[in-house]
Image (cartoon, rainbow, N blue to C red; front, side):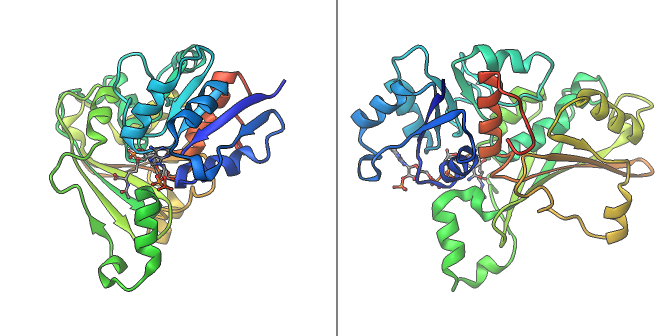
Length: 313
Ligand SMILES: NC(=O)C1=CN([C@@H]2O[C@H](COP(=O)(O)OP(=O)(O)OC[C@H]3O[C@@H](n4cnc5c(N)ncnc54)[C@H](OP(=O)(O)O)[C@@H]3O)[C@@H](O)[C@H]2O)C=CC1
Ligand SMILES: CC(=O)N[C@@H](CCC(=O)OP(=O)(O)O)C(=O)O
């Protein structure tokens, strides 16, 4: 029997990408809403309650509204928005977070997927905190470079309209130092000091890299950069979508530049440790519409349904 799947927000950036992933699946029956009625609460409620899995690819307020429309105990919601990422009763949609996370995603009917910056940040920091290498109280800072599709339909239109010279260069933002991903970054790493986080959006469609600079002297006494890499190897052993790169990855150093777009069109996450002397630079790369959003949402659906997670999703 096929699993019935509905995407609330089917015309948006993440919703369209999820439909692309589902198009090749013979085990899924996609329920579609009449585009004219896509904001009609009664019609959305009918489809949400008819679905075995419903993806919420909506702004936060509409995602909360959708969750309140569900009365069918069999419907599993997978929310791509920020609305429920630290909410009680919602499992965090990051299967690689800790041992046992997949079991939580299998049994929960409410899954909140991480933000794109947060996915990269959390998977860089959580293994080091759990291994006791990075003290939970350490003040860390992070930068993220992202493509403009992370800003959804409005930002895509703005970039693709042309004519605004300011968009030709990278644009740092969230300069109020309270980006909306910070609560989930803290909640799911265990960090107790609010990180300084500055994202930068650039003139390319998709691809994202979070960088965290560290002084090794601030970590557990005697920690080396290789210890950090080994902690990643251990934490992510057997994970199908995570690649831990060699220390000071040769091809990247030889090239002299880091390719932010190298995970595009995949659900992959690449982790790097660069180091010289007492300094280290941690970097995590993903496709903001892949492991940063739609790919991750489909991965969570597969985990929930007990379907094999393959690279092609
Ligand atoms: N883009 C990305 O890389 C990522 C996005 N996310 C999150 O995923 C969610 C969706 O993002 P994204 O797809 O980029 O956003 P978009 O703006 O591209 O799409 C959102 C869609 O939701 C529709 N919508 C708005 N209000 C309602 C409503 N009341 N009922 C039904 N449909 C509604 C919009 O309709 P209309 O077509 O009329 O505008 C639009 O089609 C957001 O919460 C975002 O923060 C998470 C991770 C990464
Ligand atoms: C370029 C850009 O604007 N990116 C978005 C993040 C996209 C994302 O992860 O989405 P949600 O957390 O909203 O679900 C931002 O920084 O707000």
